[in-house]
Amino acid sequence: MLDANLKSQLEGYLKNIVHPVELVASLGAGPKSQELKVLLEDIVSVSHGKVEMGRDYDDERQPSFLIRRKGTDIGVRFAGIPLGHEFTSLVLALLHVGGHPSKAAQEVIQQVKDLEGDYLFETYFSLSCQN
Image 1 (spheres, rainbow, N blue to C red):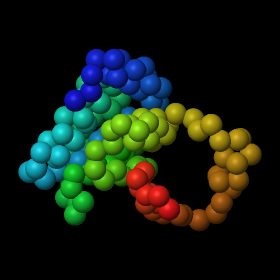
Image 2: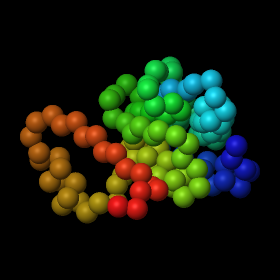
Image 3: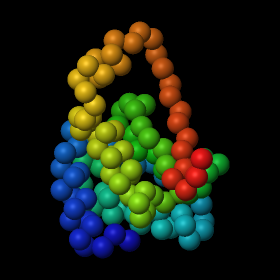
Image 4: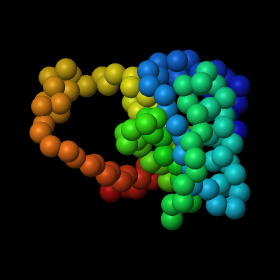
């Protein structure tokens, strides 16, 4: 699915992953699910063992997948196939879930760390939404 040039670039970025990451897919029987499976396999193939396929799960949104820091509940879920201009979001999600440091200001990072309590954030966005 990814051409050789894109695989080479992705391989360079994935070297920045600090914590193991797993990709967990919810696939149907259709062609889009097969495309997503190939994309995820391409990512794993250039990660030098830092990204692996996890056990599949069943989600009502198919195809979809979860990028999860192995052994934790830290993750980002994508519905659909993030290609084209969405591919950058996929790469950034892989890096952030994998522990690559954020470019946020240190004072902002500290403010977030200082929050007390447990939080669960769910954010939905569409790159094609005009609102």
